[in-house]
Image (cartoon, rainbow, N blue to C red; front, side, top):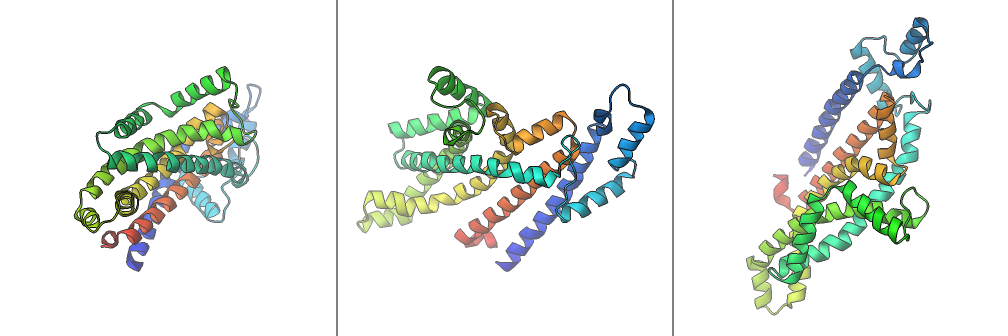
Length: 304
């Protein structure tokens, strides 16, 4: 187990190094941010001064070394647009994004686990067909379309929920539901398939022969073994949630990391873009490592 943890940590560090190189290179290819900070009346000397103050006059490998050295110390640079430290901007926005995804995760559990379990335990029934319908629609309809439909129904017609912003607990409902619908769709499909295999397995049949009730067999024995692939899928959904938050937060004007990076891309604020993407990559790598460790703890075969 120690070797497994060490191997996954080394893989995570290598992934972060490669990602930092890609992020750094792509932001430099997007254009010269100094051009966004001058106007038509600016002189060449003013442009060169801004260019030099941003460190863009140095060789690319030297710029990367300085960036990585400062990033390891928690310094992700200064925003070109707001002139605030990127780490401070992230500290302000990350809790909002985590809160949104946290509520979405709770919604997903309450939607996907009962529906996926019942669908797998009652194949061919109405609940099974309903679960497959929810799964199909949730994975085929884009999240921004779901968001616009929710706004149209609950904000425009019914007027019971705010259409955007972060003004109270009601503000969490629609954006979190958008994410939860997509997450639940995949988990329902995987859990249903896993439940069917578990119910047909010998250990469940043996439990039924011993006189264990059907409900206990389904909700204790079969469900416990069916959650292994769901754990793996949950780690992947962390990455999807971080990246899809850009779209969700744009639709609902949510003051999170997605909204921050959207404005940074529009203004070529590459320190913010680098900081957001690198932080998101770190979160994704850590989430994947934790998922592998949980999976290895549940299923010892994975350690080998």
